[in-house]
Length: 341
Image (cartoon, rainbow, N blue to C red; front, side):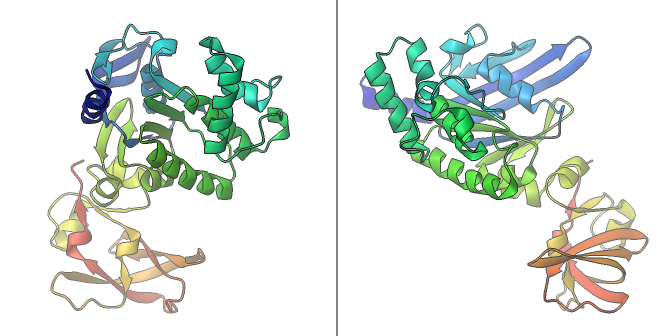
């Protein structure tokens, strides 16, 4: 088959498919009947709290864990029996896992050395990978001479030098401080676009998942409870868990929803959808709230209020005047998203 045709076929394939995959440890079902598809060239986030099954899924894709049931494929090939070193994937870990006695160059070139690549060629490829992650001229240093962010870039270069079809990232930014983490989020996204390969990114940080991923799968208790684009997950949560875990949300009771024409199920209302003052449109709901606290967050301030016996939070402009204990607030009825459970 001509190389160009082969590349086109790969692009049309899904990079990763999990079909009814489970992983059981004794009496614990760490992953329970998961169906998951990651497209070729897609940045996909596995999001969930600790113990939700996301990291176990990643480890099964990498080959570090074997599924107890189900089918796992990479570009259409069943890889259940393929050992980790023969899978066309590489993994970046939170703790970097760099060899402290080796130089940065040797760390990056290690995988090529294992494959028998000659020293001159593997060093040349290592320098290319270091330049890709913006660490040129760092090859002669030891990991102990680098900052946390630089060590993370070395770990990325080491994973990418083998040119995998899929890059797996297991909470790779968790050890970085906030400003550096935000910088690396942007650079990872740009790098993924540049390379055009699939990234599967595990995180418990909903901000990371929403800002970086093309699609997100939300895990809870070993299952995927919702998957979709960041916009779908945030604006149209299916369950109370997703509404609570992904961003900040007001989850209001069925009684409150019924009184305001939103059906007889609990609803999710995002704080930024609430505005000060009385609404004027036919679809707008206005209530009188008792102001409890005001917290300042720079560009915004967060109001905690009590409305009809329920706690309500609003995120408004930091310049918005709030002085009275009793205030009017409003939102669109369409912004109350009905939760299935």
